[in-house]
Amino acid sequence: MYNPLNPKMLQGIAEDDFVRQWSLWLPLAFISIIIVIVPVRFFSEVDTVQVLVSLVEFVFPSMQDWVSRSSFPDTTQLIFSFFGYSAFYYAVLVIRCEKYKEAFVGDVSPVNRHLKPFVAALSILLAWLFFNTAFPVEEKCLRLCIYESKTIQVLYGFIISLWMGYGMAMLYWWVSNFSKIHFGKKTEDND
Image (cartoon, rainbow, N blue to C red; front, side, top):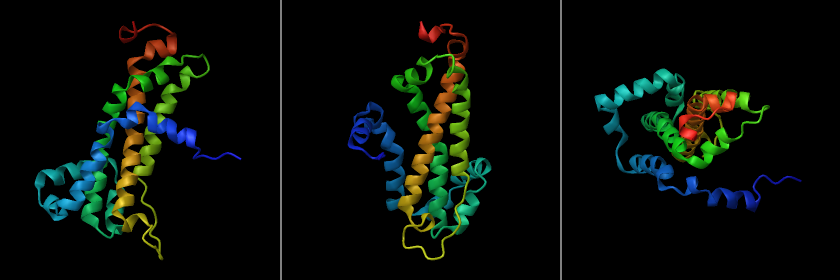
């Protein structure tokens, strides 16, 4: 029987240089500290923050549903706005990782190479869909529901933001290595 959490897989993840970077965990630590230390009403009174939040709400319209269903609406708005912008930060981090770039660009087999833009677009669209989906409110929630737990909201936002950033990185690699992927030609970066 297949065990999805076998020790070798977890050890492989733990030994990955990308996962060991402190910069990967920086946004998660930053938003966790902000939520604990700074009063959230401070952010709701700053006009610049409200403009930034409204830009995220334009891209993710369901954020208003998240906020209206949450037990702590201002914090939820801050969490999802922060992770909406963090997706670009994670895209830059992933783009800089040569190991992941080589894994994406390096395989130019005739069967797989034309599917690369589909994989990149699908990754971005699925992450956007999960970020843009507000779950229904559970009637009898025992502290495990997403609308009543800041920790679950932070982890959910972190995972979706990282996923979307990886999808944007794949899209960037596909565009910058278009000739190599589709025609087998060397690009200036790959000489």
